[in-house]
Image (cartoon, rainbow, N blue to C red; front, side, top):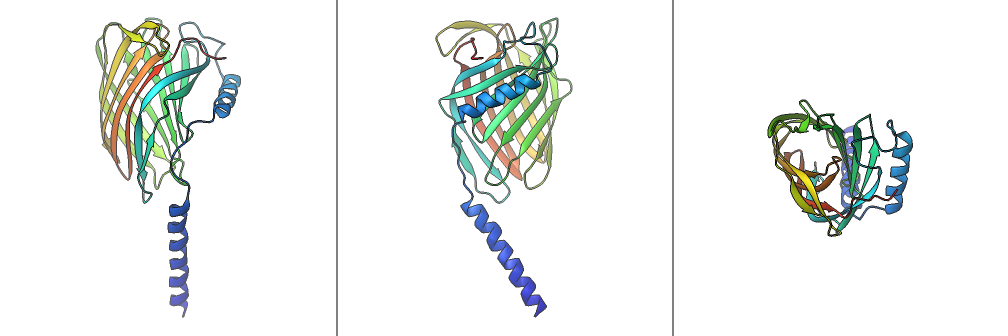
Length: 259
């Protein structure tokens, strides 16, 4: 009798869990611009640096023309395919002296924080990168730190880049190692969304990913003189208990932010 009760309860729990997975809202929507503004104001109030640190871009809300889509899967949840909106928002706030954080609001269910630091010699480093996503009832966060963390160094065309990535909030904690190179190229002209030509330094990142997640991460960034990324192109394919695929290209509309 007790065995039957236990089996019945277990069966009911399975039905509840499966039912939750089936009925939980999926898909993606453009980011709520009111939330973008609130997030920017909150981050500005918490900013450790002065308003507009010398050598870094002015704080504010920027817009990017964007194309592409993403696919993601966590555990037993079905694969989701999400196209990006034609225009996305990005906020820039000061961080530590000489550093700033750019938050890309790709979707209501996906945002990314990248903190860049600019050295006196013009070196651009990646101080940290966080990816926040919602997948059904789960809210995974990927945190990436690098050592060495230099993206662009005027004296060197190619530098090694080694990073550790930790994913929390999914079926289980996942870790991965990203090893690759960052190659700086001579300045090129980038046509912004408003038609303005801007000289920018192209930086190509090429990672091999191993660990709980395996695959490749290729990214190209074009940095303006103040280290503002004016174009970002990414091709990412990771497999494991969690699977992520991203193909996107974003170009900033203009260099004057909303504040």
